[in-house]
Image 1 (cartoon, rainbow, N blue to C red):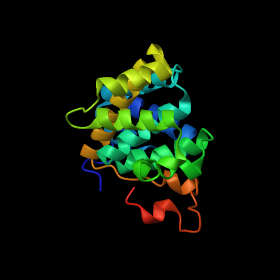
Image 2 (cartoon, rainbow, N blue to C red; image 1 turned 30 degrees about the vertical axis):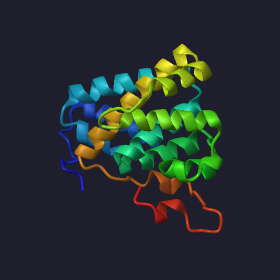
Image 3 (spheres, rainbow, N blue to C red; image 1 turned 120 degrees about the vertical axis):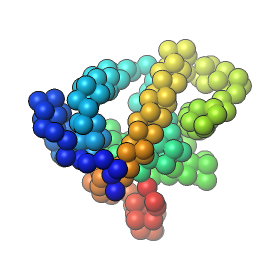
Length: 195
């Protein structure tokens, strides 16, 4: 249950943000409603997110894995739920995405570079970051400096998103329901996972 009302005052900023959210995602995102209590935070956050969407030095699939691992490590069920939908919209392999929260248990599903990116995202997300010089150097060699910087900032941004959503008490909003994620011979992941 959200810790703040999801019915903010209907300022012009909130109405525009809700309209845009319904148009783009099919419903009003709970973070939009929660942040709507402070329209300047909502507006500036929206502008920032639009700018982030234009960054393209880091391959989109790697970026998504990093963001999902960070959200899962923090325990933001809203972010992981939305991340499944985003992965589906981007055409990422859902039979792989479903295992991102437990990536260490299924390393055979991921490439070496994907494993490095997820390890880095998790290390960076720790309350006291555990990124090593060796891990950073390996990623720099594999990605290059520009993509590495983008990876660092995207993990940092997801930490902020996930921590805000978790602190506001936002939980899954049903986005993963739109992208059935069948497990081989099992019930779908969303039915067996707390995410």
